[in-house]
Length: 164
Image (cartoon, rainbow, N blue to C red; front, side, top):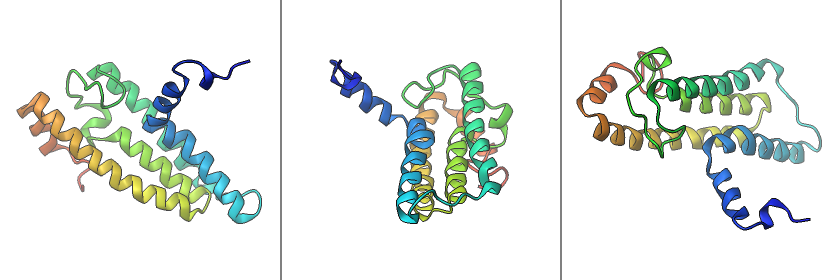
């Protein structure tokens, strides 16, 4: 019996799956960090139960806001297919990047739940990575929507409402 990867295009599908930021954030990194922490701690890692809500919050925020943006702004789920219109209501009236923020909340939760320096380093790396990605996204959106996007950008903060 042939494995999925052995079929024509299997590696291509697998590579595309790994290219998905959400697959990496919500599946690959948690499994990898758990495995590393298991190895470092010599068994099942200690878990900080109080931080579990951050994992749920980050994932739910990502999913709900993503569905909301797709419904109102149309376009694709990622950056490859830009929205057809600017979404300025709902969570987008508070921050310009609530989906990316969901990723970061989840990754912070992962670091705290597993008390993991590995996950903390991943969180720090991704905080910088997402910020750079947002800068590129903003340039594309400004070219696509012009003055209306620039006005929205001036009104709504990138990451933290009223702050940054």
